[in-house]
Amino acid sequence: MKKFLILPSILSADFSKLGEEITKVLQAGGDIIHFDVMDNHYVPNLTIGPMVLKSIKDYNINVQIDVHLMTSPVDNLIPIFADNGANFITFHPESTNHVDRTLALIKHYGCKAGLALNPSTPLNILDYVMDKLDVILLMSVNPGFSCQLFIPSILEKIKKVRKRIDNSMYNILLEVDGGIKISNIGSIAIAGADAFVIGSEIFKSISYYKTIKKIRNKLRE
Ligand code: DX5
Ligand code: ZN
Image (cartoon, rainbow, N blue to C red; front, side):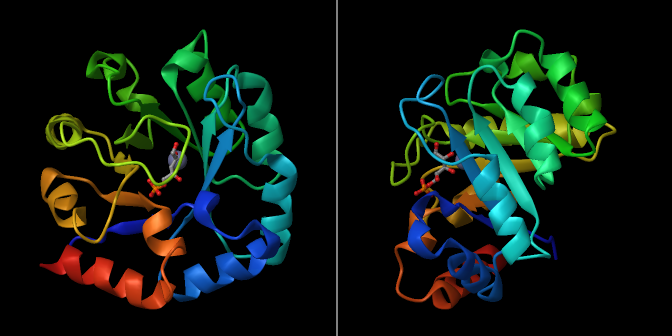
């Protein structure tokens, strides 16, 4: 059976006890922690940065962190996030002048590189960079906030990206971010996603373990 990845988004966690929250969500079955960085410029919200990343890495020593940069510009931040423990760094193409250069920079600093596409960003942006991608992150909400509703037209987009990846010679992870719930994850998986960023559905639930178990059951159906 295909191995699906669950990436709990700590944007919905309790920041007053972040280390414990991360330990709990990993014990409950989360695979990789999704770390949303917002700068009140590229998106209208302000969140966490490299110092918080370092604290998490020091506290939860084996955790893999997927840094989702919703900032502009991004190039100057890549060495800082890489030095502080990022395993994946994903950015939005509109946020940098030179997408190819930014991808190369992420690789240069030893991280896996991802490109995040907003709901209305066309797929042709992928045309000449497939060879440099480890992750394609499809946004299924407009970036900036948790607890938004999944945009249904993204299912078609996921199918198209799945085909592109399968028709290419590259091993690229197809990650979907925003509005993912127990109720819709099945259709997102059928459309072709490999990895699911999930914030409020997990962190606003009483038992992370039970919620992740229900999610895994949906992925087995
Ligand atoms: C939104 C962020 C998401 C967000 C997802 O801009 O990129 O990672 O935390 O949260 P939910 O699952 O609540 O939509
Ligand atoms: Zn995100």
